[in-house]
Amino acid sequence: MSAIETNLTAAHAEVKAEIARTDAKASLLLAFVGALLAGTWTVAKDTHPSVPACAVGGLGTALLLAAAGLLLSSVRPNLSGRHGFPLWATLSAEEITAELAQDQRARDIAGLARIAVPKFTALKQAVDLTRAGAALLVLAALLQAGGAL
Image (cartoon, rainbow, N blue to C red; front, side, top):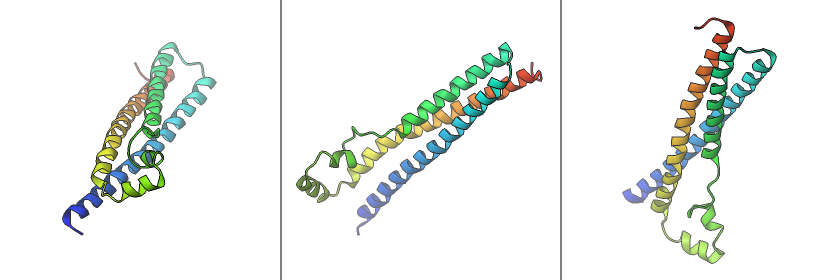
């Protein structure tokens, strides 16, 4: 195998692995956000939070919901792409054979990278929103307990 073929194979595997890692991280973060939201609801429904605690906690909850939305959008399947499964689903058996007879790894790497960048960006934003939302929930709890401000 030539150096170009080896590099194409390695790059293709790397991009696919990064997408899988991002999806796994998004899944874990989505579960964490869900647990935070469930815990917040459980605590809030059993207490009578003060107005400042409600305001801060509500903002924190809104940020967590925004993070959940970003995470869901990042793992949403993109069936409009023209590579991989979506492409194959539109081709006949003969067209698939003709398509696979050519080395399409460079095209696939570019297509997968275009899928990966928005996933990475959404995950990064979701992590930032989760941090901010969790911090606001801690602040709301401190306000409710009377230990802050």
